[in-house]
Amino acid sequence: MNSDSPYRVGVAGASGRMGRMLIEALQAAPDCRLSVALDQANSPALGHDAAAFLGQTSGVAIGADLAALAGCQVLIDFTRPEGTMAHLRACVQHGVQMVIGTTGFDAAQKAEIAAAAQRIGIVMAPNMSVGVNVTLKLLELAARSLASGYDIEIIEAHHRHKVDAPSGTALQMGEVIAAAQGRTLADCAVYERVGHTGARDPSRIGFATVRGGDIVGDHTVLFAGIGERIEISHKSSSRATYAQGSLSALRFLAARPSGLYDMFDVLGLR
Image (cartoon, rainbow, N blue to C red; front, side, top):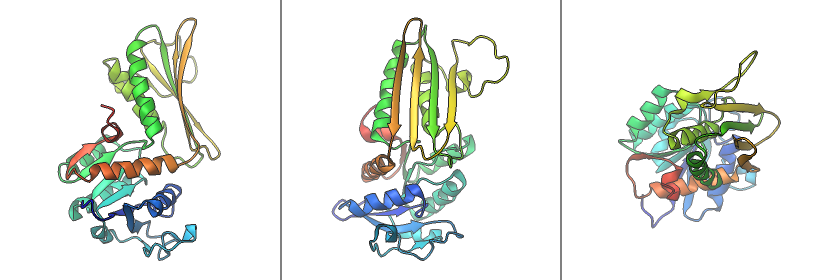
């Protein structure tokens, strides 16, 4: 990217909740310019100016043709796995970098993203919030210090429209905790409990999911010991934090033509 001119940025899911928050952030960022706005082919927003919901004119009409990606340097994508994978292939074709906030990928899709990162720069994180990523760093420290004698439970809550569970952020919390204790999440996660479960296995990391209303995103990790418990929580009241984190991620990619990164890399938390 040329740092002397505004970054030409595309937004996927332009008429969705997160898409609109990203467009609003881009409109306010002097070093960024919205250049492509994508949505599904059946979206009623097609053909409308992407910033019309703000009472502004961006000069960019919402469209569904992925060939338009040739007109941007980086695409920000908070959609769904199947959409993101189609966008990924188009970005590789056109040499466009990506900031991926989509969650719910399976192993094969993650492998395809990793392979694509050999050709383009990608920042992928289930949560772009600076606060969430600082929370992950705190969890890493807590997990090392509380590796024995404490039961670990992860509780997350999101709005009624979220389609995957547990949330990508909750899973990343589990992965960070497990790795800090020399384990893998796949070997110790418990995602549901029903019926006669027996006594709790102290080696497990439990997950609980809440869906309702318009909750943007709440996450709490409970370390429950004998006589005390430690709770580390992050609560989002606006998607604006995700949008600002995404802009930090695209700026990070400016000097990196290829590679797969996350928000720890962007924020220098390694």
